[in-house]
Length: 108
Image (cartoon, rainbow, N blue to C red):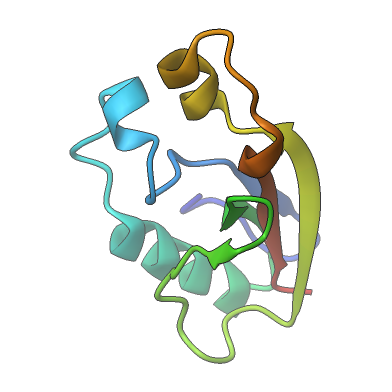
């Protein structure tokens, strides 16, 4: 990311802060360090797309992500289906109440 500049596009798909650290062993992941890197990319003219936690429990819970004001200019929620974590936990039981959406944040 430190090499990204004008006319570059950086796509970030980090471990999601709300639940995925337990799935991927990403306990040392720093969202703040990533957000600082994104700010650096943006200041050099690079465009950045960040896919991160969105909603859980079929939209009843908005995942709270501490995004600095002004870093991103657009946000979209993309329905991605049933919760992957709940698929493991509920083994064969119904998952209708566990649809999730990812949040796509764009600096452009």
